[in-house]
Image 1 (tube, one colour):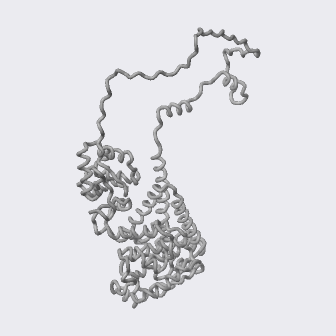
Image 2 (spheres, one colour):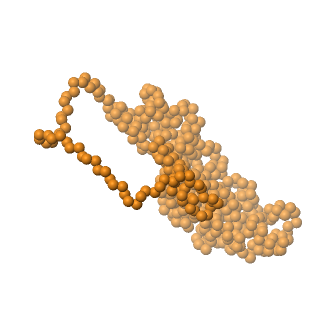
Image 3 (cartoon, helix red, strand yellow):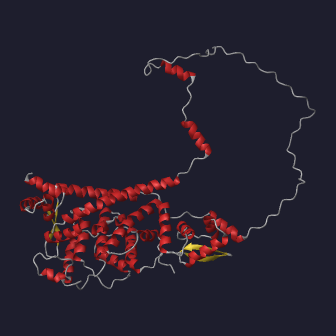
Length: 525
């Protein structure tokens, strides 16, 4: 291969480090090849406004192949957000958003090493989470923060946004601290006295000047949007300017950059958390980027990590739509099925159709033989015989016939109907007007499983009723449980009281009966 071919292969096709290049070529003698690669990247280098901890200026390699990958990735982001934005059905849109957020929370749990099951995450997203596990608090606060930014117009990605996000993650209305004023350990000081030392965070006295330059970088509109977003994520992960929550804030700022650039707050749904998931290659590129200043390593890594995840989410959106349409389908009635079968059945050939086939010149070698054909009717119509009308018998005087008033029947009196008790009437009315569950069929099944696993005190009927009757602000009755579980009234009453005692429902008195309304997440007794 020529010099240019080596450079193109290991820059535009695969953006490799020197060590990875040696592995690809199966030799440790790669100095000459690496020199060619660095020369090609240097010719396409674009300097950025901010610097590494060791004062190395960041830059991007914007060769033709790299720029093509960036453009394709940004087109994928824009198209995917456009699909979500155009969803008209509120229930489908909510389910799609929960699908995106599930990916976000699952990755964040891996980053923070938080033990939380997929069923617990789904219950948290559905508003049906009822565990009392303090270990889950960071995930709960992270979800609240994400939803806070999703539900508003996109703002500017700056220090103010970081401060607001920091307060939400900590659960504090007013921050009493911002940038950290001490180091996590002595490693940053040791690295600063070494040539080419590995920094895993910046010394606290260097944070403010580094961050000031960094915000200048975020304002560079000439840099690709995805590069600014991934650059923001990497920089906060490198500097770690806060005493805690640095990973969450890095991802939130990266999403804020996309939301501002695209003018769409749904960018906070994108699972950029995947980039920071524990991965040996990310750890290698983390150090390589701070030593060389080449941010292209992290950008190409982010594109490779996110593309299959986004493709999977795109497929899940289609599946949610299909399931929603499938749920609206109903079986045909016998009359409709009969009509459909008649329409689909082949018609028997008539004499005229046989004659048409006989006179058609093309397809058949010999015309079909017709044994007998009835003679055509004569041109002159046959005379119509009109029957003689039968004359009615004369009547003396025509009278207008009116329906006679019905005579009182001498039948037995109707049985006396007993009055229905007011409680049963109201419960039956509420049962008839029962709202559908806010969850999809798949989510209902998962919620039943979650309830049975997280609370062994519940039986299957109680879990199934709760999963199908958990819409906030709605009221449910004992009669509904009785109908749903096909059990005795006393069993239904006991079960509803148990669900209330377990904190899933709040029991309220209505006239001379009780109704039950779901308890909001976080308000469980």
